[in-house]
Image (cartoon, rainbow, N blue to C red; front, top):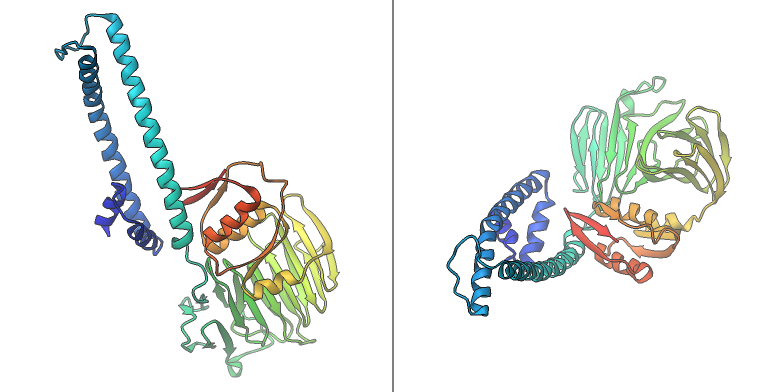
Length: 392
C-alpha cells in the first residue's frame, strides 16, 4: 500500500487506485497515520525539488529570452543592459504566472475529481447494522454477527440487525440498585436496535450510546443516554423507566418517545410519540408533563426551555432508515450528515443561513448524492481538503 501512496502523491494513481487507497486509509487510525507520514514526506521532497529546480527554470528562461532577442547568453550572473534585465525579469514573471495558473487550474480540477470519488465511493454508509457492547466486566463484544453471548449475569441473543439483552434474575437482589453498567454504542453510518432486560426496546441513532445495569431494581429502571434514541417502553406502573441525559431526565411508565442529547448539539429535546412522559431539568427547577406530538427542547446556549409541537413522522423516517428535514437550516443538515458519514464538513460562508431544506432522503445514498441534492437548492461549490469536505 505504501507504493500506492507514493504513486498517488505523484499524481499517477488511477481512479480505482484512489478509491482503494481512501478505503484503506479509513480502515484504521494507524493506516491514516502511515498515509499522512508518507504524504508529508512527499510534500517536503517536492518543495525541495521545486526550490532546487527554480534557479534552473529561471536560467533556462534567460537562455530562451536571449535566443528570442538574437543575443548570445554567456551565463553571467549580471547583465550589461538594465533594459534587458527588466524585460528578462518581466518575461520570467509572466512565465511563472502562466505556469502557476495552469498548475492551479489543474489542481482544482483534480481536487474536485477526488472530492467526487471520495464522497461517492469512500464514505461507506449503512452496509450492515452493528454496535459495540461494553460489558460491566470491561469485556467488549461487537454486536451484529448473529452469535449469542453469555458473560456474567448477561446473555445476549444477537439477531444481526438487533439484539435482545437478558439477565439472570436468579442471582439478582432486586431491592438493591446495580451500579455496574453495560454500554451499547453505535458508530457513524449505523443505527442499532436493542431490547433491554425489562423488555423495553431502544433504537440508537448513529454516534449514540446507552448505559444500563445487568438488572433493574424493583423501584425504578434507570438508563443513561448520550446521542439520540427512540424508546418503546414496556409498561410497569410500579417501576418507572427513567432516561438520564447530561442536562435533563425523562420519566415514563410505558410509552414511545424520542430523546436527543448529543454533546455537540446546542439543542437537546424530548419528543413524545404516544403515551405520557415527564420532563425534569437537571436542577429539578423545570418539570413538564408532555402530551403526544409535543416536545420539550432545551437550548444549552441560552438556557431556555420550549414546549412545542413536533412532527412525529420524522422519527418514523428514522426507524425506516431515512433522513427527514423539515424547514431545516443547512447547518442542521450538515450536523446530521457529519454523524452518519463520519466526515467533517466545513461551511465557509453564511450566504445560505436563511434558506431552509425540506425532504426525506434514504440513508443508503452516498454522500455525493445528498450533496448534489442540496446543491440544487443552494448552488454551492465544494472540494476535499485534508480529508474534510469544504463548502463555499
